[in-house]
Image (cartoon, rainbow, N blue to C red; front, side, top):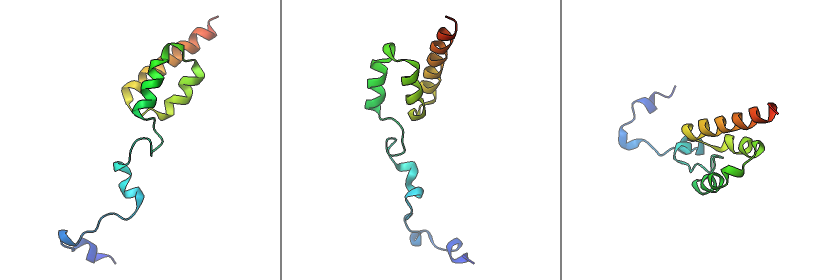
Length: 84
């Protein structure tokens, strides 16, 4: 049993050794999300973005508000195509 871990004084605690333990500190790009530069470039060209481009970018968006806005734009594009 690992009771020594529970009773260890604070100064005996070690840094996490597993990369998964430090995942919350990793850069968004390392975790597979788009960088600020990639998002800025994408948003600069959003007026010309087609549904496929938005679909490719959506999984890489971490910001909830931006994700919702892009999802709404994708739905508007797709509904416009189906209505013609």
